[in-house]
Figure 1 (spheres, rainbow over the protein chains, first blue to last red):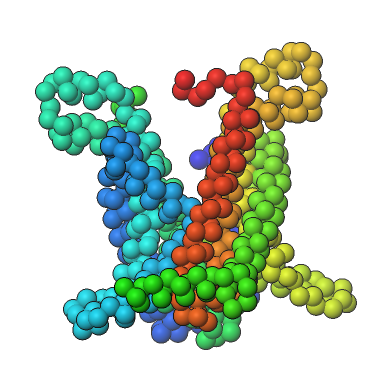
Figure 2: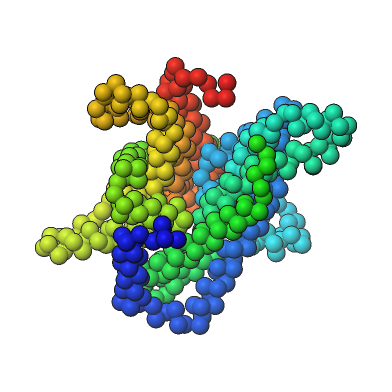
Length: 258
Length: 245
């Protein structure tokens, strides 16, 4: 702590506090008192968080088979997995989101009977497309990471398990997957922050996440900077929390694998 | 089956280069996207060189300020940064101009886009280059000092070539991010590929066709870039032992 708190840092922190104080006093924050906006902001933050959580979990689940197929699968599984990863990683997420929502969505009304089916109330909403697009994005980026992780597990470990007479699936479950996940763990925090930074894109398909709420406040009140600053602050805090959470999580697992 | 045939025909008509089709618009959008990506990547690289130098050799305050810069940029969504920088930068320039008694100017979308994305790219480039410079073996630098090379010559002949091969994979990744991040500028209304696609799609209602076509264009850019960067990396690693080999 002493090391960290050098004289010049005290001055810098003082300047930063003064800057924040000036922002708090001299900018217009009156709209924060409006209960309607408070409710909207909380709702938006909640939406951002659940999208992040759901897409990260589903994406990781998809990434494991994608990585495995590329690392050890036969060609008829490896090639599609590789093509999927290249296509998703080679095009902007915004475009994928629009292709799913506007593109596929515009084809649906042409399918006879779909409008009367039980799926229609879900297909009409924006969130299934947002979840799908963001999940596929995580799956492709993490699939690539998992491929490297599966390949990085030393062969001796798998051979030892084989020599012990373990069935193939047990080897995968007890040896290969845990060691691969252990390798991925240090990078997962950064990837989650990247995913957090991707979530505002869902506001372009009419989802009211944190970013969209800030946009609405700006439109209603004609205040330009203040909602944006709050927005940046919210994302900064969440990014910081994610990094701390993963650091804590990472420390709980000893680095036993060489 | 006939209706699908008709659909394919109309899709091709829509994508035709000549005016009834929208091909020319899409390609103009692609040109704008590439222009911004080149500019932002180049400018970001300059910021990155300065930033990496500052982080490694700068004073205490420079180092802390650079840490704040890279941390904030890497934690706040690009979409938010683009809005803040877009309004703040154009607003600040115009205010300064008015203060000094000049007319307000309209800042073109290309310039604003390049400036905004360069700030984002610069933060990542700083980290990539800093890591690459740190990965240069100390022994090489000590050998250069022992030979009596000046610091400038050491930088030019030893650090730069050795750093380059470490930095190229990270920089290639940054370039791909730059090409994809240009799509975000469509949110502030700049007519790059995604915006042009959206305009064509909403006019003709052929969303699927146009978004798919734009996706193919982005994919081609990404695949060609990857090929080129692989060649560059092979060239930069000439004479080095293969990693892990």
